[in-house]
Image (cartoon, rainbow, N blue to C red; front, side, top):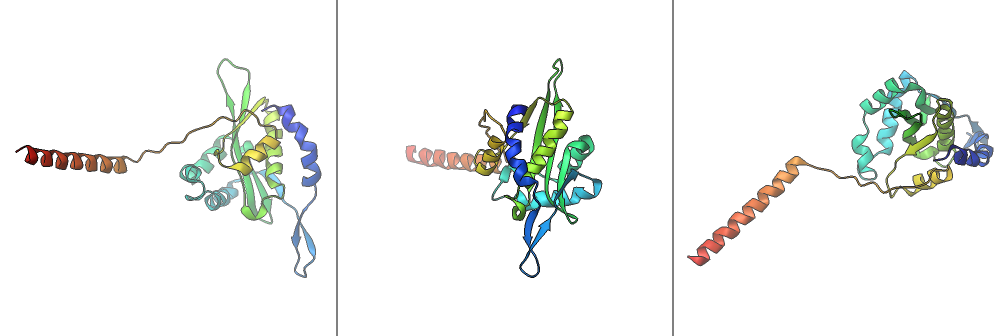
Length: 207
């Protein structure tokens, strides 16, 4: 991703994001919701984890469901605190962005890797993801990052649209594979059993 490409999209986003988010008041009127984008704190860790649990389900996102756990949140917070951001509203965490800076030996380039970007379903399409990403991008650029990287599932069309709008290009297909030793052994046992029965039948016929 080109940093200039992402920045070129920002002006249009900022016009929408600078306005407070609307919500219904008790009497049917409009009240303002001020969502704060800030660095994640220790007290936010369980809230971030539980939001991820709500979003990453086994039926909708099986790969993310398998890789998301409390140790992932704690590890990223301990190693890269300044690149762990939350969207907070009245003590509630409604979104988060977790990432890190990747460096290579014998290379002056730094890479910004956005590992997780999540917004609570009820606060999606309100500009929260854009505000999280923009803050993440600012921090990465301050750290000297020149290239940004993300990964997402190939059929996650909303995410693909979002990142393309931010300037990400050159998508590459990535294949996920799983291996269950117990299930594999059961399949092998069935094949051996069927092979044994088949051999026994053929032996009786030849006799």
